[in-house]
Amino acid sequence: MSGKTAKLVIGSKEVELPIHSPTAGPDVIDIGQLYAKGDVFTYDPGYTSTASCDSTITFIDGEEGILLHRGYPIEQLSSKSHFLEVCYLLLYGGLPNVAELTDFETRVTRHTMLHEQMMNFFRGFRRDAHPMAVMTGVVGAMSAFYHDSIDVNDPWQREVASIRLIAKMPTIAAMAFKYNTGQPFVYPRNDLDYASNFLRMCFAVPAEDYEVNPILSRAMDRIFTLHADHEQNASTSTVRLASSSGANPFACIAAGIACLWGPAHGGANQACLEMLEEIGTVDKIPEFIERAKDKNDPFRLMGFGHRVYKNRDPRATVLKESADEVLELLGVENNSILQVAKKLEETALADEYFIEKKLFPNVDFYSGIILEAMGFPTSMFTPIFAVSRTIGWVSQWKEMITDPKMKIGRPRQLYIGETKRDYVDIGDR
Image (cartoon, rainbow, N blue to C red; front, side, top):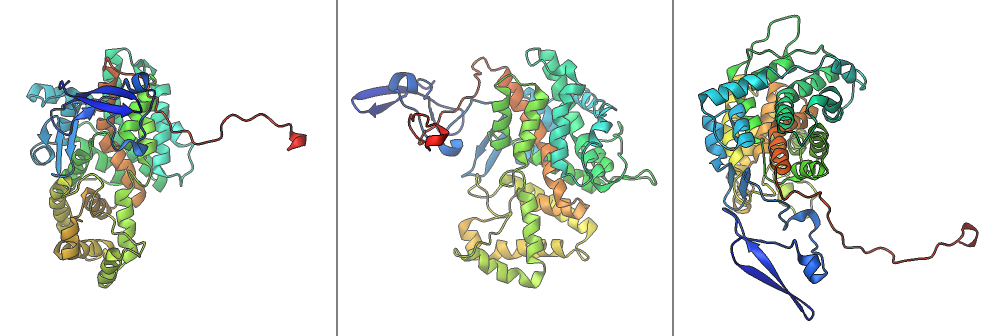
């Protein structure tokens, strides 16, 4: 509490509301007692001006292009660290020492296997089911297979559930991919790191050995790291709202996956690739650039600019480096989509209109390019996002469960429907 207050005048009534000052970001007016004191609600569609919780995990300053996890800049974490170390940081609040990181990596690595009976669960889906549909169902079903870690009031069960979700999500996503393509499942290996294990489970086949290229593994690790958490976004808020009822962790994370599936949230890099396919060839780029500038044209340049970041997306700067490395390794000569992406990036970065509007390539632009180059279909882009974001969901869930101020979520409404009406018998209507 800052000691400052805000006064709200409602007719002849004056309501005094406390103001909280965060360690970073704007002050927050506490309206918790507004209804009791003023007999009014606030109206904020989309909660764009409402803080739904207090949190110590992630901070974003969209105007300055800043993303901090537990105070550490994303640029430092993605260049000096790796995904599982960032997972530890988000989950426990600080960077681990060597012994702590080794223990954490061992626990995660040794929980990557799925319960063997869950293989039958996969076979219940149609072969052409979207991988996100499969992931939503399988993760929700984990509570039936791992019922020894669904008591949210038991700290040890919460810990076990957290490790299981972080460890098994890549396996579930890879199996959803394999099932969709008709190939046999590939089991995880304990001698591989998190990103390499995922790539092997996706692309290996029993008929031959598969060696993970370190450049591709590093790029995948960066994609995981850069998407790990992003404050109170739609899917994170969904996880928090579901968990406020006391629902088990697997159900809460399944709810987050379902929300992420929405094209306005997790489908941005897929939309970017679909745009590149629409452009088709390099010679058509000038035409689409002009269309993007035309306010009367419905075409939008996907993968440029960001709703939160009003300047550069700090994650994009890091991922561009990996995108350049991957494209140099795999080449773009035989892939028209990647040729369009490279030329579009060059054109937009040199165009005064995009510079003035600060429409720079965002993280979705570069992650889409990398995943396309690796050989992932667009249907796998959002499942990979879900693998990345699981640690953010789990960390936010864990923080909420242990918050003594936690209440079940119950948003209010501005009712604009009919007032009381008397029932009319069907024969008299």
